Length: 549
Image (cartoon, rainbow, N blue to C red; front, side, top):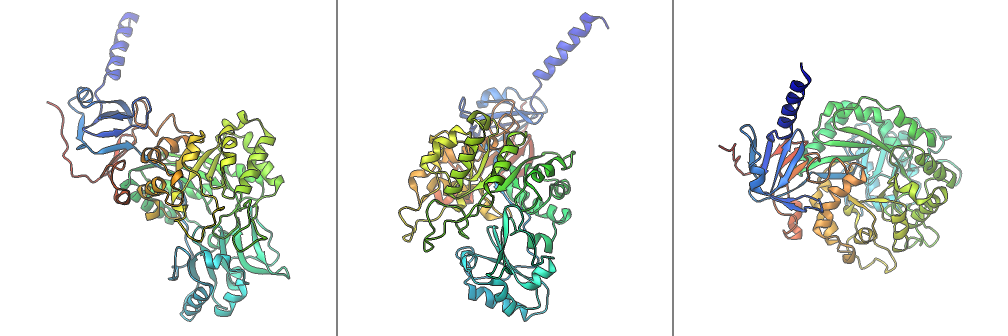
């Protein structure tokens, strides 16, 4: 072919591609774009999985061709696809959990828990399992002996509903192969009595071991949990999920996601604390992960648990816990281990995620980061602080300087309490943003259940009754669930905003979450959810406007 003819053909083809009619147009919407250049729009055009245009109704309608589907949003609020920035899915007890009074807070008393176990032990069966709350978790008795007295022949597992702690009896220890001379895992410990004998407690990195040994994660069953959670998330307009891969290997999770074939995009944060034989083993697990991943799945991390939580009172605090003047909590890792974690992260391409809740532990981490490298080295890493409760007003500038990204969980926020001491600090939200610390919101749900509802979490973040001065505006909360969460996973160039070139992840909502009364927010659903321009959920009372004539 003559060059002139080839060039003319190429120009014609490129012109057709550049000006091809979009496959889908959504008009008559109230689009919250999360794009500061154009924060609002009326309509969007989608071509090949990406937004090709964002504008007003007339200009977007004019782009439609004979095969373009046009959807009338009926004036509803449309947002970037929501991003669940912190969730655990797949926690399974060895048996159906016993009914326990008082859950979630404060849960059963020790006597109520023991009575429930004793009653279950009188029935035929194998494992006895139950979720517990803070009362049992903070009870310092020898739980192995107490459970042995009421259930000597049946394995028993009591699990803190928030993770971080577990309690077992002698039969359970035998069943899962934990001997008296067991070594503590990295980032966790087995409780012992004054004589050095196991007392039935398994904390931090040791806490998931009983359940994972009793019921090893299996891809097909895990896929069922992923699929059920994904269906709920699609109804809420959630298009991306940051999975904290607790208690599971990357291989099992990747296999399960391949089986589940969910429509959402997943970033799987490899789990480190308690699961690896060495600090270096956390990154070795990532290197050994399957190279061929299912569609829309990526791996990052690892995630380390650096301290506990205020619930079981193991988060490392500056001040003692109420009623325990000698106890401020503890770190899960020695200074040498923390140094190795941070130093290794600096030399790796992956993003580091660390659970830090106590303010003293946060101080320790920031000091170590400053010692190991200049702030410019850390800003590129974009270290994620999961929960961020330990950041205080006097460390905000340091957090911003180090390029920290905070993923906060509004369901953790305590309600106003007359018993709360004036010196007890509250988690920061608005102050983070004011200081230049990027913020994402997630649920920290263990099953992706009702507590994972993003609109419940937006309600809690924008009301924050215990600390109204830290409450976010609705717009700020929505940004944290979209653009902020994309930034938190280093995917802000690909998703999180409605603008040309970005992935066409979109949610058209049942009500305007920026204006409805606060108490109405949790009832919000999506009526149309798109992932890469494909409809993955549709349940709306609006007409398809059809194609233009």
